[in-house]
Length: 257
Image 1 (cartoon, rainbow, N blue to C red):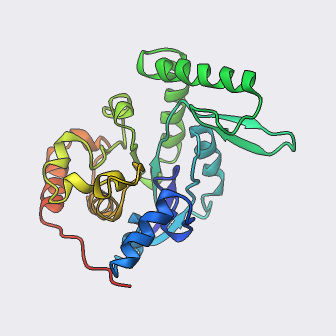
Image 2: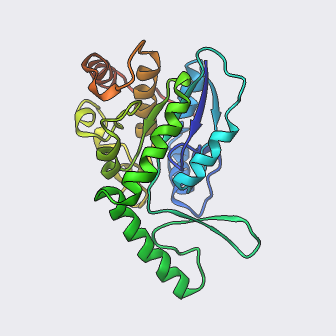
């Protein structure tokens, strides 16, 4: 089975390209010193027999993710699946002076001009409210994302987001599944208090999933992938029970260097 993964830095395999001066690099180094090699959720899926095509981009906006749909192999094979992690709606796209795409986050630190930076910071706040308070993005862009995913329904997509406030936006939609930090799942996880890097190592202020979060995310996704039917995952009590059971009864394997 081929899996096409789309998303931001929660999908892009950061362990495969850590930088020593960033928290991810420091995290990998800490584990390396303990004789442990952390695995990304896509590493586990590959280990479990899936052919993974990771199209995630660290720092991506949802516009970046939409554009990545064009990179999915058009020669559809029965059994192919898509897994999409939607990102924060506060991120925008901007062309730099060389005409290259630049994704601007809510702090806009990548923008040198302080006036333009202030504009982007204000826009980020407005965009976040537009989604969470039923504004233009909630009534126009989110339905477009639903449409885009439905166009690819033969891939039986799985949608998730690492942003808890966005789960409320998507939770009743087709193909959506809550993530491992959702209250219905996190209490089932043995290491639920260590899913993100900052909770495993408090001196590293990084909320990406660490080795525990990536393992249990992989367990959740594998359960949905193997489930035989349905489109409204969160309304399927049998599926939720299977996910809960697997999260409770799965233990992260040792991954020595």
